[in-house]
Amino acid sequence: MMSNLFSIFDPSTNIFNLSINWISTFIGLMFIPYSFWFLPNRFFMMWNIISLKLHNEFKTLMGNNSFNGSTFIFISLFFFVLFNNFLGLFPYIFTSTSHLNLSLTLSLTLWLSFMIYGWINNTQHMFIHLIPQGTPSILMPFMVMIETISNIIRPGTLAVRLTANMIAGHLLLTLLGNSGMNMPSYLLIILIFTQILLLILEFAVAIIQSYVITILSTLYSSETN
Image (cartoon, rainbow, N blue to C red; front, top):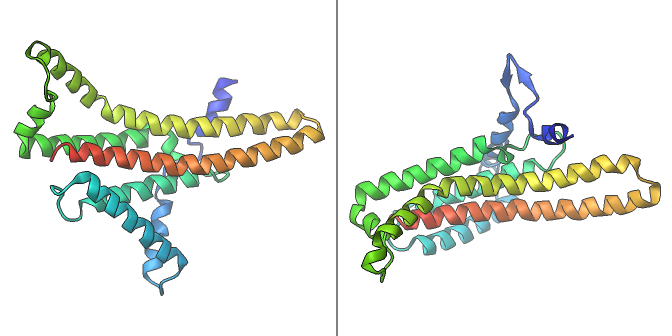
Protein backbone atom coordinates (compact mmCIF):
# COMPACT_ATOMS: atom_id res chain seq x y z
CA MET A 1 0.00 0.00 0.00
CA MET A 2 2.76 2.44 0.94
CA SER A 3 4.79 1.67 -2.20
CA ASN A 4 1.69 2.27 -4.36
CA LEU A 5 0.92 5.47 -2.49
CA PHE A 6 4.37 6.99 -2.93
CA SER A 7 4.58 5.80 -6.53
CA ILE A 8 2.70 8.97 -7.56
CA PHE A 9 6.03 10.79 -7.10
CA ASP A 10 8.02 8.39 -9.28
CA PRO A 11 9.25 9.51 -12.70
CA SER A 12 7.40 7.01 -14.90
CA THR A 13 7.89 8.27 -18.45
CA ASN A 14 11.07 6.90 -19.97
CA ILE A 15 12.62 7.15 -23.42
CA PHE A 16 15.81 5.17 -24.01
CA ASN A 17 15.94 4.52 -20.24
CA LEU A 18 16.08 8.29 -19.57
CA SER A 19 13.33 9.93 -17.56
CA ILE A 20 11.83 12.91 -19.42
CA ASN A 21 9.63 13.93 -16.49
CA TRP A 22 12.33 16.30 -15.28
CA ILE A 23 11.81 18.37 -18.43
CA SER A 24 8.64 19.69 -16.78
CA THR A 25 10.95 21.51 -14.34
CA PHE A 26 11.73 24.04 -17.06
CA ILE A 27 8.22 24.47 -18.46
CA GLY A 28 7.79 27.63 -16.38
CA LEU A 29 10.72 29.25 -18.20
CA MET A 30 8.68 29.14 -21.43
CA PHE A 31 6.18 31.64 -20.03
CA ILE A 32 8.76 34.24 -19.00
CA PRO A 33 9.91 35.56 -22.43
CA TYR A 34 6.32 35.65 -23.70
CA SER A 35 5.47 38.84 -21.83
CA PHE A 36 8.54 40.68 -23.11
CA TRP A 37 7.79 40.13 -26.81
CA PHE A 38 4.36 41.72 -26.77
CA LEU A 39 2.72 44.88 -25.52
CA PRO A 40 2.33 45.12 -21.72
CA ASN A 41 -0.63 43.11 -20.47
CA ARG A 42 -2.05 42.08 -17.10
CA PHE A 43 0.37 39.21 -16.72
CA PHE A 44 3.31 41.47 -17.53
CA MET A 45 2.14 44.13 -15.04
CA MET A 46 1.53 41.57 -12.29
CA TRP A 47 4.96 40.06 -12.92
CA ASN A 48 6.61 43.48 -12.58
CA ILE A 49 4.71 44.34 -9.40
CA ILE A 50 5.64 41.06 -7.70
CA SER A 51 9.26 41.36 -8.83
CA LEU A 52 9.50 44.92 -7.52
CA LYS A 53 8.00 43.96 -4.14
CA LEU A 54 10.42 41.06 -3.80
CA HIS A 55 13.35 43.22 -4.90
CA ASN A 56 12.64 45.84 -2.22
CA GLU A 57 12.20 43.22 0.50
CA PHE A 58 15.32 41.24 -0.40
CA LYS A 59 17.36 44.43 -0.65
CA THR A 60 16.28 45.38 2.86
CA LEU A 61 17.21 41.95 4.22
CA MET A 62 20.60 41.88 2.52
CA GLY A 63 21.52 45.39 3.68
CA ASN A 64 23.81 47.89 2.05
CA ASN A 65 26.60 45.37 1.49
CA SER A 66 24.74 43.56 -1.29
CA PHE A 67 26.12 44.06 -4.79
CA ASN A 68 23.95 45.39 -7.61
CA GLY A 69 21.65 42.78 -9.09
CA SER A 70 22.09 40.27 -6.26
CA THR A 71 18.39 40.39 -5.40
CA PHE A 72 17.48 39.13 -8.88
CA ILE A 73 19.15 35.82 -8.07
CA PHE A 74 16.63 35.25 -5.31
CA ILE A 75 13.72 36.60 -7.36
CA SER A 76 14.58 34.03 -10.03
CA LEU A 77 14.75 31.33 -7.35
CA PHE A 78 11.32 32.34 -6.06
CA PHE A 79 9.65 32.15 -9.47
CA PHE A 80 11.45 28.92 -10.37
CA VAL A 81 10.24 27.11 -7.22
CA LEU A 82 6.79 28.70 -7.50
CA PHE A 83 6.27 27.51 -11.08
CA ASN A 84 7.30 23.96 -10.19
CA ASN A 85 5.07 23.91 -7.11
CA PHE A 86 2.11 25.08 -9.18
CA LEU A 87 2.74 22.65 -12.03
CA GLY A 88 2.74 19.74 -9.58
CA LEU A 89 -0.87 20.53 -8.65
CA PHE A 90 -2.11 19.80 -12.17
CA PRO A 91 -3.01 16.22 -13.15
CA TYR A 92 -0.36 14.07 -14.85
CA ILE A 93 2.42 16.61 -14.36
CA PHE A 94 5.55 15.51 -12.53
CA THR A 95 6.17 17.32 -9.22
CA SER A 96 9.91 17.97 -9.28
CA THR A 97 9.98 19.93 -6.01
CA SER A 98 8.74 16.87 -4.13
CA HIS A 99 12.11 15.20 -4.79
CA LEU A 100 15.31 15.84 -2.88
CA ASN A 101 17.18 15.59 -6.19
CA LEU A 102 15.99 19.08 -7.09
CA SER A 103 15.49 20.76 -3.71
CA LEU A 104 18.83 19.56 -2.31
CA THR A 105 20.64 20.57 -5.49
CA LEU A 106 19.23 24.09 -5.24
CA SER A 107 19.87 24.54 -1.53
CA LEU A 108 23.34 22.93 -1.55
CA THR A 109 24.48 25.00 -4.53
CA LEU A 110 23.33 28.25 -2.93
CA TRP A 111 24.82 27.35 0.47
CA LEU A 112 28.20 26.40 -1.01
CA SER A 113 28.25 29.63 -3.01
CA PHE A 114 27.56 31.69 0.11
CA MET A 115 30.19 29.84 2.15
CA ILE A 116 32.91 30.09 -0.49
CA TYR A 117 32.22 33.78 -1.05
CA GLY A 118 32.09 34.53 2.70
CA TRP A 119 35.24 32.65 3.70
CA ILE A 120 37.28 34.08 0.82
CA ASN A 121 36.16 37.71 0.99
CA ASN A 122 35.03 38.13 4.62
CA THR A 123 37.08 35.60 6.57
CA GLN A 124 37.23 37.62 9.79
CA HIS A 125 33.48 38.24 9.72
CA MET A 126 32.80 34.52 9.24
CA PHE A 127 34.97 33.65 12.26
CA ILE A 128 33.23 36.32 14.37
CA HIS A 129 29.84 34.92 13.36
CA LEU A 130 30.74 31.56 14.96
CA ILE A 131 30.70 33.11 18.44
CA PRO A 132 27.65 35.22 19.42
CA GLN A 133 28.38 38.48 21.18
CA GLY A 134 28.55 38.20 24.95
CA THR A 135 29.37 34.47 25.04
CA PRO A 136 31.42 33.50 28.17
CA SER A 137 34.96 32.31 27.45
CA ILE A 138 34.29 28.85 28.87
CA LEU A 139 31.42 28.29 26.45
CA MET A 140 33.19 29.54 23.32
CA PRO A 141 34.43 26.11 22.12
CA PHE A 142 30.93 24.66 22.48
CA MET A 143 29.34 27.61 20.71
CA VAL A 144 31.75 27.19 17.79
CA MET A 145 30.73 23.54 17.49
CA ILE A 146 27.01 24.34 17.73
CA GLU A 147 27.21 27.18 15.20
CA THR A 148 29.28 25.05 12.82
CA ILE A 149 26.82 22.14 12.97
CA SER A 150 23.80 24.44 12.54
CA ASN A 151 25.50 26.01 9.54
CA ILE A 152 26.32 22.67 7.91
CA ILE A 153 22.77 21.32 8.16
CA ARG A 154 21.22 24.42 6.58
CA PRO A 155 21.03 23.06 3.01
CA GLY A 156 19.47 19.84 4.32
CA THR A 157 16.80 21.68 6.29
CA LEU A 158 15.96 23.88 3.31
CA ALA A 159 15.59 20.87 1.03
CA VAL A 160 13.64 18.70 3.46
CA ARG A 161 11.26 21.55 4.38
CA LEU A 162 10.28 22.13 0.75
CA THR A 163 10.08 18.44 -0.16
CA ALA A 164 8.11 17.39 2.93
CA ASN A 165 5.52 20.14 2.53
CA MET A 166 4.94 19.32 -1.12
CA ILE A 167 4.71 15.57 -0.46
CA ALA A 168 2.30 15.93 2.46
CA GLY A 169 -0.39 17.77 0.51
CA HIS A 170 -0.14 15.49 -2.52
CA LEU A 171 -0.42 12.39 -0.35
CA LEU A 172 -3.52 13.73 1.37
CA LEU A 173 -5.20 14.53 -1.95
CA THR A 174 -4.29 11.07 -3.26
CA LEU A 175 -5.65 9.30 -0.20
CA LEU A 176 -8.96 11.15 -0.41
CA GLY A 177 -9.19 10.51 -4.14
CA ASN A 178 -8.60 6.78 -3.76
CA SER A 179 -11.17 6.47 -0.99
CA GLY A 180 -13.88 8.20 -3.02
CA MET A 181 -14.56 5.17 -5.21
CA ASN A 182 -16.03 3.22 -2.28
CA MET A 183 -18.14 6.01 -0.82
CA PRO A 184 -21.91 6.48 -1.16
CA SER A 185 -23.12 9.36 -3.28
CA TYR A 186 -24.07 11.67 -0.39
CA LEU A 187 -20.56 11.37 1.09
CA LEU A 188 -19.00 11.83 -2.33
CA ILE A 189 -20.31 15.40 -2.49
CA ILE A 190 -18.64 16.17 0.84
CA LEU A 191 -15.44 14.56 -0.41
CA ILE A 192 -15.39 16.69 -3.55
CA PHE A 193 -15.94 19.85 -1.50
CA THR A 194 -13.12 18.78 0.86
CA GLN A 195 -10.74 18.17 -2.03
CA ILE A 196 -11.49 21.60 -3.47
CA LEU A 197 -10.62 23.17 -0.12
CA LEU A 198 -7.44 21.10 0.09
CA LEU A 199 -6.49 22.13 -3.43
CA ILE A 200 -6.89 25.80 -2.48
CA LEU A 201 -4.73 25.11 0.58
CA GLU A 202 -2.10 23.48 -1.63
CA PHE A 203 -2.00 26.58 -3.83
CA ALA A 204 -1.33 28.63 -0.70
CA VAL A 205 1.36 26.17 0.43
CA ALA A 206 3.02 26.38 -2.99
CA ILE A 207 3.32 30.16 -2.64
CA ILE A 208 4.38 30.08 1.01
CA GLN A 209 7.08 27.44 0.50
CA SER A 210 8.52 29.35 -2.45
CA TYR A 211 8.65 32.46 -0.31
CA VAL A 212 10.14 30.66 2.70
CA ILE A 213 13.02 29.00 0.83
CA THR A 214 13.82 32.32 -0.88
CA ILE A 215 13.72 34.36 2.33
CA LEU A 216 15.93 31.88 4.19
CA SER A 217 18.40 31.82 1.31
CA THR A 218 18.49 35.62 1.40
CA LEU A 219 19.14 35.61 5.14
CA TYR A 220 21.95 33.06 4.75
CA SER A 221 23.45 35.24 2.06
CA SER A 222 23.29 38.36 4.24
CA GLU A 223 25.30 36.62 6.98
CA THR A 224 28.33 36.32 4.69
CA ASN A 225 28.56 40.10 4.05
